[in-house]
Length: 169
Image (cartoon, rainbow, N blue to C red):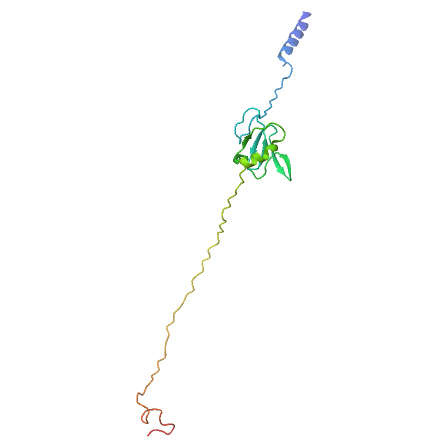
């Protein structure tokens, strides 16, 4: 009976040792997009740059940055404000190195298309003001009638207005 508590402690310790999880395991997932962006065409292995005619610059596939000419220098930028990459028409550039702009004149001459923004005419909706028509009330016009007597006799002394103030004869 003396061994019973020792045996119970041994069984309980063994159970805890096997039931406890072994060393902690961690899983880390890294998602690296190698290849082309969703808006660009498929590229052969080893391709490093696109020439993007809409921005007249380049897109670095490895660094996932645009390279544009600003103030006379080629500058890498993360985004192009005011542009939607889904509307780009990138061209795969056969160049490996750090300066794709070394062939800029050739790329510009072949592929550059200036972006033409078609402005729609602005139609201004003017409010329609309905003015009531003026009401014209026509009143009957009463013309006073005068009786005018015209004497058709000649003026040789027998007609009217020939008495010259002397009365009638």
